[in-house]
Every structure is written in C-alpha cells, then in structure tokens.
Image (cartoon, rainbow, N blue to C red):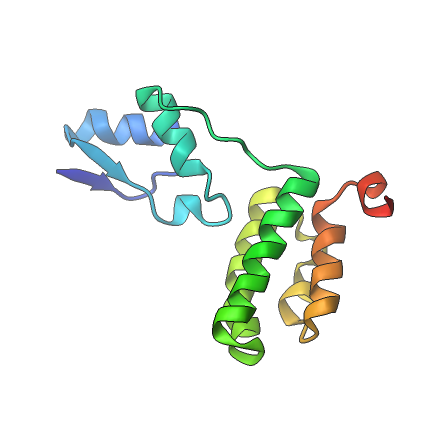
Length: 128
C-alpha cells in the first residue's frame, strides 16, 4: 500500500507512514519546483545518498536547462505556455518570486533566461 496526500518533506512522509501503516509514500505537489525533494525524503527515511540541492548558479542552470528543454520539445509557442507553471514552482520554492510576473508572461526566450538568471543568482554571481 502507498500513502499519498500533502507529503512535502521527510517529516510529513514519516507521519503518513506511521498513521497509515503503508509500505511507501507518493509525493506529488510537494516536489513541484524541488525535484530533489524525492531524493531528500528517501535519504532521510532509508539512508540512500543525500541529494545535492542546487543553489545559486547551479539552480539557475537547472531551471534554465528545464526551460530550454521545454521550448525544444514543445516548440517556442506552446513551450512558453507550458513552462510558465514550472517556472512559477521553481520561483516559489526558491523564494525568488520578485520577477515572477515578468518571467511568466515573457514571450522572448532570451529575455526570460536573463530574468531567470537574475532571479536565481546572487548579485555578485550575476555580475560575473
């Protein structure tokens, strides 16, 4: 049996397992914008290797890579629309929401990438 529902981290996974007696948990929305959360929960519960949680330039590279992959796969017009929800999740999870509106409504991929770099990089990193 698998438990699910509002599992966002190791603590909520432990609680769900304890309350349900399930064999495992399923994480849905709790991983939106934080795809490494699954590996972190597995690490905390079972001792698997800890994930490397991207920050700064590494996080910017991950988000921009995902954005570019969406545009490549779906084409620019549809990719821009599909990317909006994913970019919103990354921005929210990272606490980088100041540029959210401009990023999610941007229709020039190069400008969106510049805004993503600004959103995820520290000022010193962005200037380098």
